Image (cartoon, rainbow, N blue to C red; front, side, top):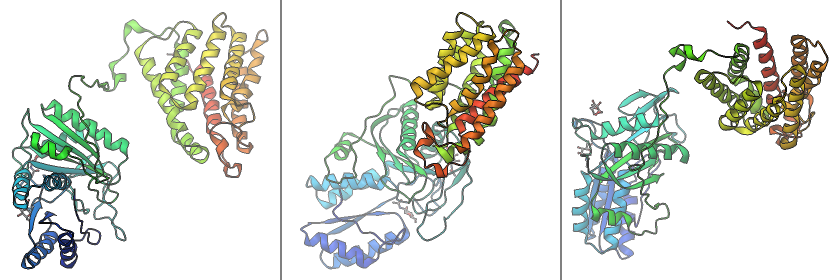
Length: 508
Ligand SMILES: *[C@@H]1O[C@H](CO)[C@@H](O)[C@H](O)[C@H]1NC(C)=O
Ligand SMILES: *[C@@H]1O[C@H](CO)[C@@H](O)[C@H](O)[C@H]1NC(C)=O
């Protein structure tokens, strides 16, 4: 692609001397001509221009193209279009032309024709980190900056956080708006190359989400995406942002972009398309709770519903506390996993009447948690509920409930590999189960027994503080660093507490 690169200090144009040295070196290596590909910044224009003049007086054949692919500014009066990620496409095409033996003047001619057919726009969640100095601007957590430069220059527009689809749509509007002088002239049917460029601080996951949105948005506007390039082509040092570049292409330009190169960082282009198989999007219902109860769906077991609602709100209220405990012992997502389960249960409750029999309820909950909760907690609760449901199939009197809890615990131990004393949720559950055995006695008082069981579970959860982890999340951590109770045990005890509270509360 390129024969030489001249780098200045970070974010600074290189000195004329460095540029001249590069030109002379390339000449000595046998180049018949040299094309300087310069991004449109004042310092670069000056230094490269001066070097070019000097080289020409030395009899070297040198030409220059200035790349301004920025579409941030709507009017021409501003500092002008800056050179952004589109420059990399120029490197590739000019390099391929040179490799094919095309003469210098012809390359300049062909490249100049492409410049007007290209546009780039960036968006970021953060300023970039300039080594040794402060960020050039500040952004709040929920803010995005549109149209920024690659040297930490602030952008043209600040906006609130939105979904990737919404952001990409807004970027494309800005890049193609007919009232914006620097726009890319896109029409339905246009064929483009899309570059989704990491400004430095995004993960591949995030980058590809944006790429997916961009392909989707462009195709829904009737644009044909001939090639997509996704990667880190022109970064702004750790900036958590992305730029989109669009280049209108024909077959000839595509051949240049497709041609082989030894540049290791040049990726294989992707042919991405979503047309033909339309993306199915779950449209989130706005506030489903406000729709009011459906009179045809009067809950069959008001107590059970209340109990589940109590469990869900308890899990949601504990989300941060459980995450905090888990940060000390595991990966910090225990609260999120439980909150995710709570939301799934709430949606499920909103959508249908409860099953009539407890074993049906437990099986349904097991299926729901296995599908929606995730993590080992999801699998373990799923196991517990599945085994307990089996046990409740024939009988659901009080004694059967005690047996069901035992069956659930046994299933968890069998597949989870933990035992009481290992610093897991089993510690709370086993402590409760021991008390619940009292339900097998004739005339057992459910509320009294449950109350005692919850207290024991809470005490057991608290005492996991002093346990060495032998299974589960914390077993990877040195026990000296474990000073807090196990989040899984705390969550299980809290669920039991919520069950008790739900049973104590009067259904309306
Ligand atoms: C480069 O920027 C200058 C202003 O600094 C502007 O006048 C010029 O049109 C720009 N050139 C390109 C190629 O965009
Ligand atoms: C450029 O296009 C955007 C997006 O369509 C529009 O909102 C804006 O008013 C135009 N002009 C400027 C100054 O950005």
